[in-house]
Length: 426
Ligand code: MN
Image 1 (cartoon, rainbow, N blue to C red):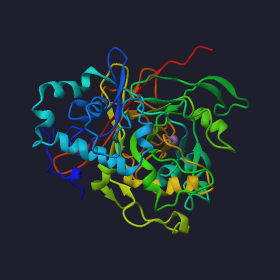
Image 2: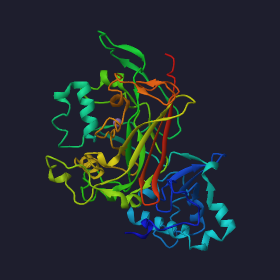
Image 3: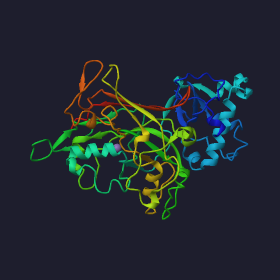
Image 4: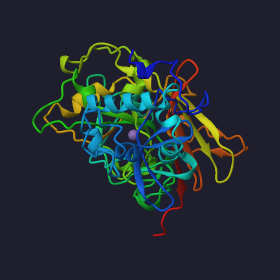
């Protein structure tokens, strides 16, 4: 095991047992001060670590980053492009500086104050520039549930589904960071029993519990990324809410798939958790039968044990946890998604976001959308305050959280939160 993953490692910075950011995590993000100035950070406990200041003071001078000024900008893309050796060097340097025995920052009051900032004093902003966004459909349970509702139980899973990771090209411009309000979309729908479509605000607004990963080093156009090399192109992961207007989706989706039902907003959590931090939580995924074609076969543990929860809170009311799932239930893994995406020679580029698709488990308490939880609105959910929900109403907030549970510590992702605001009057 890499020593940065040692469960016994402790920091001189106080970290609660249920904190998402112990010394074993060290995620990357971008923070904004109250005056709007943005800077690249990591996190420990309830503090953010100013990596731009650490770099100016030369702490990365014994790493491949020396002289590169990689943390002086306001996005992670330049760092992400450098690749795993550089990511590991920075992680190892940070881990060393923060461990309990190291006095370098711990005993230097001036340095400590300038690089460790209370998380409550900053706002986390979009951590990178996302070039392209692709959304997969990799949960067998989700695909089966939606297929059953939209096409009937006999046509639930399409004939291709068990042979390739199905996806659509999404919209990168409307990916927003946690905390950004989402406006209810307006569009065209065909109401039940109606003969012609109508135009107006979506009445069937939903969330989708997903996770996503970001491309580190780019691939070359015309040059597929192989399944055994795929993880070298994956920088890290975030929580994703792929907001979906089901009434718009139902009317528009055939024959080319989602379009306007999904392009009005996708929310991500602000902290990118690296594959290095997730390594101790690597695990097997579901067995794949039939065996995938050779270009999609890889060896070893191919996914991660990441616990996920979603809460729905009506306007200024208490939240109710409405589902609990796990990333490791996904049928297709990240290696297979990236390999399949680039097998034509399509070039994945630094900062591209590839999301998992809705993560639904095998029981009715682990479904990753309201569409499934309420079975198309037929079985409303009861919330703790006594209200019921079939779908999302104006003022409702959806909060996704996720973490890997270690022995006495958590590698967490923070939260991915968004509140629905009323549609524009048309
Ligand atoms: Mn989706």
